[in-house]
Amino acid sequence: MKFNWKSSLALAGIFALIGGCSFNIQKYEHSDQNVRVIRNLAPLAKNKIKLGEFTALKPGRTSLYCRMTAPVETPGEVPFETYIRSAFLTELRMSDLYSEKYGVEVTGSLLDIGFKSSPSKGHWAFRMEISSPESDSFVVEYRYEFKTYTDPDKSCWQVARAFVPAVRGLIRAVIEHPDFRTKILGIPE
Image (cartoon, rainbow, N blue to C red; front, side, top):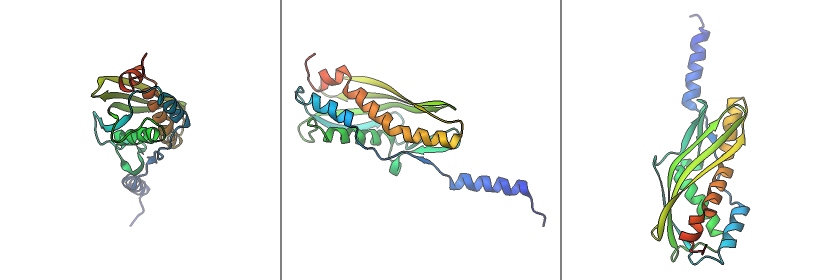
């Protein structure tokens, strides 16, 4: 039997795709800057926050494909909306604004999430609606830019690595939003 290189390479490619690899997003760690901002708001706030459910227009997604190479995945394959809620909860628990029992319930809906990874620069983009029974909802749009590479593997690794600071920025955009301060926390303008 004659050895066929083309068939062997095709078979190896199929096994690589089946076995697959992914670019893993890191577990969230708090942002000192966010905690400082929240702590500074605490003495001014009339209301504490109880974090409710976070949903998504496309619920349950745990990964997004990067440059047709491999998926960028959340740790433990938790949905993006769950990851963001957990990150927000981490920041609130480190401040004096969180109350599991007596706070104003704040919910979130992830309207859109995505990233772009071109050969030299990339970004994560989020659109999130924040709601509370105490006030009208408001939408926060946030974009986090970062450097990428020509090499697809290095670039996708950078996409995964940039997710934590992107989520930190999204949370900062929420807590610095005027409606968050006035309508949810009850801080006078």
